[in-house]
Image (cartoon, rainbow, N blue to C red; front, top):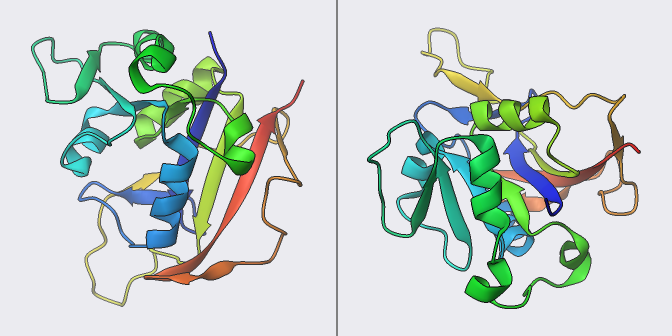
Length: 195
């Protein structure tokens, strides 16, 4: 199996989003996500697929679902994580051509797990990932004004420091933020599986 990465954006408390969708808009992080995953295979759950409103162009979109008759334009269906990873990885060069990424992303995996929460947890429990690329958005979305109805929040998986080591060269300097884009400033931390 080729190397596998996991990529996500979270707030300070590890919130990925809510059952209703994204809780922030940070265009620079969207561009970062595209730069990381372009030309690659993406594994996602059905809820994540539905939130996209269509296939991500220039990538192979693999959707994990229990529904045996589910189809969607631009998507490949998988019934398990193992099947999804194989579909996402095999034959990328033939379908999408040479890896178009540049900079540090050019050395990273071409196969990515991109959500949602239950798919991330499955991938962590199965130990399939070699690299984590985590954007932290400078927000705390769980904090709500008194009396406001809180959405059902989806949380990122825990990063076990016994298994993962922060890559200082590929990560942003601790305590710094990239410029505000849309709703917030943001930063990127890259984690590599310990040998």
